[in-house]
Length: 208
Ligand SMILES: Cc1cc2nc3c(=O)[nH]c(=O)nc-3n(C[C@H](O)[C@H](O)[C@H](O)COP(=O)(O)O)c2cc1C
Image (cartoon, rainbow, N blue to C red; front, side):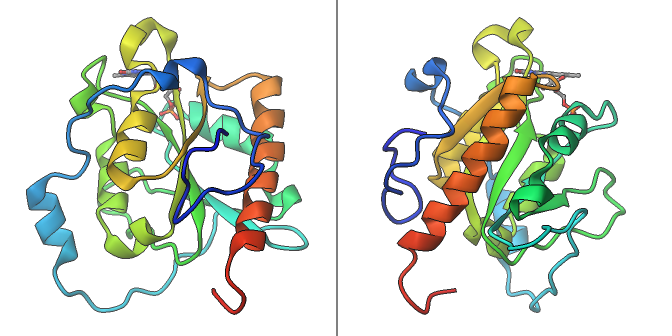
């Protein structure tokens, strides 16, 4: 990660997760949140209770990852191989089917999302991810984004990360292709551990 302003300030010394160089050339993404979806989800709604993680942190809990993966499960395999619970990270999965109960996350998280849209950046976000981030409560806990994709899509490679970073004002922490390499998994596991540790140490005393 670079010195990109994260959350309400720079997280000092967060270097373990490095962005890909292509991230330095900004695109102008389409709105991630459509006005209709925004209005629908930002109406006064009763407080929702938090969803249970798919996998709970083992030992000291330091943060959370929320991920989406389609039926091809590439991202699910990547997440499983990262062994995030072993470094104290809760793992939540955004449901695939519309009839599933919506995911509600009440703790700071980094989102891991595959890119869709077939090269059309305006469609880069899977609709399930849009729906999740259109919930104001969920969005308020978002601290960073990791995106995946396929280099066959050229300039749209991992565009979902650019869209979320631009619309939600969070750092684009890392990108990887398909199911990732062992090196990607190591960098993400160690990088997220460092990221959440620094987040905790930069939090004002007494803040939640
Ligand atoms: C219909 C379709 C469209 C895609 N569009 C893009 C794209 O625009 N950019 C990109 O980088 N990858 C794109 N991909 C590649 C996916 O991001 C990649 O296969 C990812 O690993 C899928 O993750 P999942 O199996 O967890 O859903 C696309 C894949 C499919 C099937």
